Image (cartoon, rainbow, N blue to C red; front, side):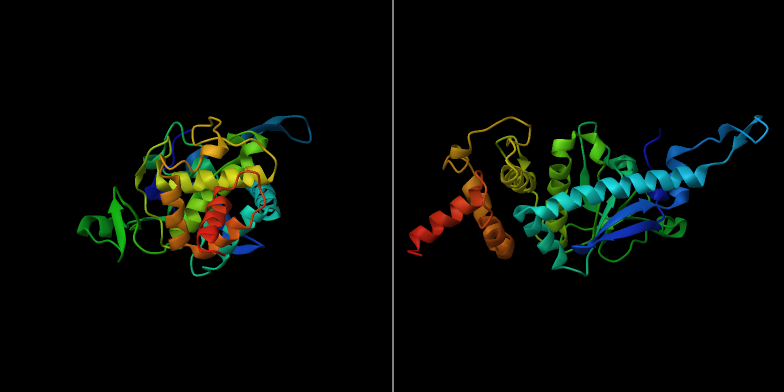
Length: 286
């Protein structure tokens, strides 16, 4: 199967909004894009007389795959909605209805962004340039363009695409993986996504935020917690002064106070945001 060419994306999609955050949209590519990626061949099937013939079953196969994607994403979103940590993230998304989150199957991740180790990816929406725009060096306002594809600059709120397929991980992690990407999406559409290098195996502060909120969610469900590289860690030392955790989570409180306050109320064995908030209130005498 060939990797998807971002220049060919039409942005014509089959879409199903999530009831609890209608700007979170379960998305499936247009039939033309689906055929470009999968290059389906006719099926050899018997007719009424038992004679095998080539049958063009593209539409039924397309619909089967679309329904499967929709069913699995809806299941994970439903699980996320059941937990306080998940509801906190969905509330932040819902509060910005001018921007949307489109959840596509992972297979449709643009080829330029493919990474062997990636399980799911979130990025600003990508739009194709026309031949005339490419020839004239013309790009839409506020967009960056490369190799015929354009995307919004990192500054300011923006709609995003999430490329996610639940079967890329085991069932116990699937909803957590999606929540992880929704944290990135929520940071993008809130206009506060700022990727800065960070140690401790987290690569950058945005992965730290997404993984920490995912682990609060897992702890709320009574599941084991782990760092970005799936290694267990000592929750009691998470806010150790030698790490950047306290500083970075304080930045979250400043940038997104409503999210911070909602997460601080989550009843979970691992919740460094609640721990940090309790410490702050104690110092303030509250």
